[in-house]
Length: 399
Ligand SMILES: NC(=O)C1=CN([C@@H]2O[C@H](COP(=O)(O)OP(=O)(O)OC[C@H]3O[C@@H](n4cnc5c(N)ncnc54)[C@H](OP(=O)(O)O)[C@@H]3O)[C@@H](O)[C@H]2O)C=CC1
Ligand SMILES: CC(=O)[C@@H](O)[C@H](O)COP(=O)(O)O
Ligand SMILES: [Mn+2]
Image (tube, rainbow, N blue to C red; front, side, top):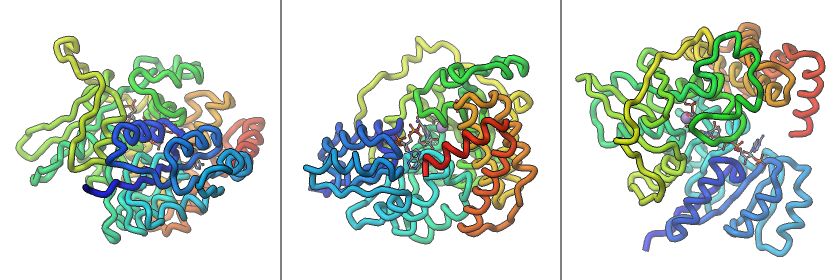
C-alpha cells in the first residue's frame, strides 16, 4: 500500500484550512496531518489537534501559547508559538506537502522556507506571489518543489493545461464582480462593511472577501497567474462572470478555448492540488446546465474599481511594486473592516502608497521586508488620525 501523504496545514482554522481538513476526513487512508497552525484561535486549533493527532501545532500569536499548551497537555503533541516557528515546522522530514492557507504577507516566509526544503506546496496564499513571485517561482524551480495552485481560477487554468503541449495564447480569468458589481461610483462611497462581506457566490475569510468586492482580489490573481504560468501582462484578460460557474479559461494559438466549470466550492481545487495527477471522488452538488440557462459576461470597469488597474500597473513596473500594493491594501482593508475608513478609501490609499514608496527593481528578500514595512507606514499615515493609532495598536497586538 502507498504511504500516506503527510500534510502541514498552515492556517488550519481558516476557510481554506478547515476545508482541507474536510478532505483529510474523507480520505484518512490517503492523508495524515503532521502540523496544524492558527494565529489566535487556539480553541479551534486545540480541537483540530485532538481530532487529527499531528506531531506539532503552532500558534503564531504568542499570547495564546499558554492556554493552547494547557489544552493539549494530555496529548503527545509539541506546541510551538511565534511566526518563526511557522518557517521551522514546514522543514520537517515528516512533511511531504505544505497546504499554504495563511492570509496575506504572513504566508511569504513560510512558503519560502517550504520551497527551500523541497516541499510540495498546495498554494492558496496568493499574496506571496504578489509580493515576491519572482523569488518564489525561482525557488520552486531550483529546489524541484512543485507549486500546485489552490485558488479556484488558477486551479481551473492548471486543469485546462494538464496534458496540453501547446503554448498558451492567453488566459481569461473570470471574476464574479463581487457584491457591488452594479453600484455607481457615488453608491460605492456609502457601502457598509456588512454589504462588502456579503459575497454573491463564495463563503471565504474576511480579507479575501473584501478584496473580491474591491476587485483587488482579481488584480492579485492577475499577478498570481503571471508567475504561476509564466505569462506576459497582455496574455491575461479579466472577464466579469457573475455566477462563477466558469472558473477560468485558456485560449490557444488556433483560437480554441478550454474552460473548467464547477459549482462554487473550494473543496475541489484543494483536493485536486493534493491528489494531482489523480482525480478523487468528491460528493456535492453538480452543475445542472438546463437550470443554468444563459451565462453572462462583461468587461470589468477599472474606473469604479481602480484596484484592478493598479495590479496591472504593478505588473508593468515589476520589482517591489506588488509588495507595496499588497502592504497598502492590508492596512486599508483592516481599517475598512474596523469601520475607520470607507470602501472607496481602499483604492485611494493603495494608489497613494504606490506613488510614494521607494521603488526597487530587483529586490532581495530582505528588501521585500523593508518594502513591506515602508509601505505599511505610508499607508497608515494616510488613515484618519484616530484610525492610525488603532491600526498601530492592532498591529502590536498581533505580533
Ligand atoms: N477562502 C477561500 O475560499 C479562498 C481563499 N484564498 C486565499 O487563501 C488564503 C487564506 O484565505 P482564507 O482561508 O479565506 O483566510 P481566513 O482568514 O479564513 O484564514 C486565515 C488563516 O490564517 C491564520 N492567520 C491569519 N493571520 C495570520 C498571521 N499573521 N500569522 C499566522 N497565521 C495567520 C488564521 O488563524 P486564526 O483563525 O487564528 O485567525 C487562519 O487559520 C488567502 O490568501 C486567500 O486569498 C484563495 C481562494 C479562495
Ligand atoms: C474562490 C476563489 O478563488 C476566490 O478568490 C474567488 O475568486 C473570489 O471571487 P471573485 O474575486 O471572482 O469575486
Ligand atoms: Mn480566486
